[in-house]
Image (cartoon, rainbow, N blue to C red; front, side):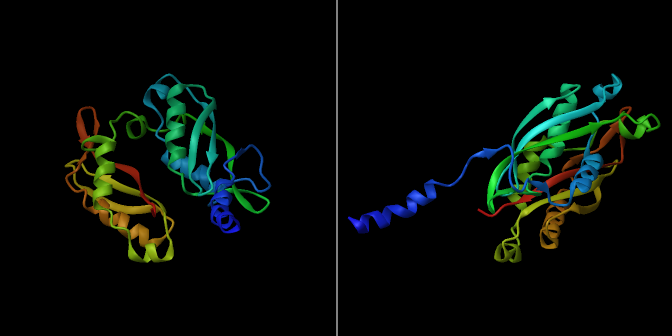
Length: 233
C-alpha cells in the first residue's frame, strides 16, 4: 500500500501546480528590456490606422493581459479605447513582445499575473502624410497565413540554441523594393545572435514572395517588420 502511495505521489504534486492568475504579485511582471524600451518598441512598430488618422482619432488604449510563467502574453482584454481600430492595432503591437517579459513571482515562485498597459496614439501635425499614411503597405504573397507557413517550413533550429536552451522571438526588418525584391534584411530585436542569424537566413529566402507598397497606384519602396519565433517543444 505504501509503495502504491509513493507511485501516485508525484502525480499529486504535479496536479497541484499553481495556475491561478494573480492581480497583484510580490514581484510584478516586467518587460525584459525596461518600460522605456517597451514604449520605444511600440513607437517604432505602431502603424497608425488610416481611418482613425483621417477622423483625427487619438488617445490611449488601455489593455489588460496575462503575463504567463514563460514570459508569453495571453488573454488580451481592452479596458478603454477611443476607437476599435486603435484597439486592434494596440493589441497587434503588444503581441509582438510576447516572450520578452519576465514573469511575476509570489514567494519566489513564478506565477501568472494580470498586467495593465496604456498604448498611446498621437497624431503628429508635421508628420508627412505621403510617407506615413497614404500608402498600401508591402505584404507577403498569400498574406499572414502563407508567411507563417513559409517560416515554419524553412526555419532550422540552430543546434547551439537547442543545446543551450535558447528560445524567443526575433523581429526581422526588411525593405521591399519597387520591383518586389527585398533588401536591407536585419534582425532589429532578438534574444540571441545565433537566432538572429537563422532568422535572417530564412528572410533572405523570401525573394520573390513579397508585393511592394503602393502610393497612388504606383509601387514604392517601403520597410516592413515581422516576427520569427523559436520555441523548443
